[in-house]
Amino acid sequence: MLRVIIDREFRTLLFSRANIISIAVVVAIFLGAGVVGRFLLNDADTPEVTKFAVTTQTAPLEPLLREQGVEVENVGEATPEEVFAREDAPDAVIGGTAEVPHVYTNSRGAPSSQYVEITKAATVGSLLRQSNISPDIQSKLLAAESLSSTDLTEKAAFADTNFFGVAAGVIGASIILFVTMSGVNGIPVRVVEEKSSRVVEIILTTVKPSTLLLGKVLGVGGAVLVTNLTYIVGALAAVYISGIMPSLGLITEVGIWPILLNILIWVVFGYFIMAAFAGGIASMVSRQEDLSGPLSALIFAALIPFYAAVFGLQSSIDATWYKVLSFVPGFSQYFMPIRFGANQSGWSEQLIAYTLAGLAVILLSRLGAVIYERSILRIGERVKLSQIFRKAA
Image 1 (cartoon, rainbow, N blue to C red):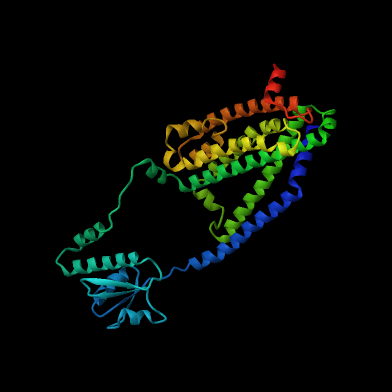
Image 2: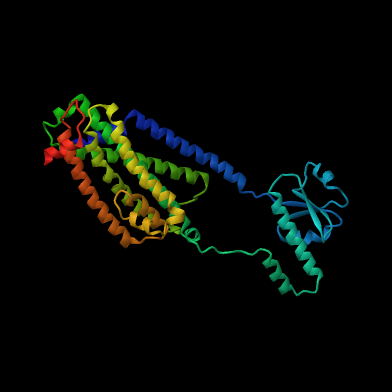
């Protein structure tokens, strides 16, 4: 009987008109974005060459500008206004003298500050070459013109983590949230539909309430999983079409397979932590209009941990509170994929979190089953938790 319930719930949700339209629209958007991205990226593959014009007075800077990859044209005694009036005008005109140049721009291309830096480097190099300073000292002085710094704060430490891993962790947490929200919305709606039409009274003559709830959880979960896998395949196809990821070998090169496996495990835990409990809570009401209150509470219970994990990522990923919450069921399904992707957590910590999440699934499922059993046949009234636990006592 359980198999029949699972199959019914799976087919009802997966092949519903709204779900099919949603899948078609989302996949079409992904593929369309991939095609558009391919054209845009192909246009961007041909880098624009920076073009400078030098006058007779600034001509000594020409070889040093060319060393920086700049295309240079000598315009003789022409003024910047005359040069920019041409159809093939350069990005910048260097006037003044070789010792004290002045950069003229026409607000096209890169910011004028970039052109100033290029001209500055050429001017410094020209002055050094005119002096009796050795080439070795010249190169060191030029290097000193572009000093860099290293920030050792937590934010900088975050920047040194695996970028692809962090991105995959955040995307994984988003997928977990989406799967959880789909279950939180799908299961309660199905429960209340059956209760309000009193079909559940007939069904419960042949099956136990706990079996019916389990069938709903597994059937809806399977439909949600297939739907989201379709979205993911569409997104990967779009990425492939756009040319961002030419082959799956890129995933292997960045070592992302363990992260994807970890995300898949947390998708399962994240769904089951909320699913059975959501079904039990929904059975306390008899009308769809009364479902908004319990649903809002469940949605906030999913959103708050997700936003805490994402917004605490950059500044607090090494903080004690972030580590502690990553072991707390309800939070761990969002925190742990991000920590694992950022190389802040290993498999040993993940196994501990899996165990705690598994215990939470068992406890919440049993609690949801008790609430469901004691509420599902109470038609026409809104059941309070105090009534359920009083009866249980």
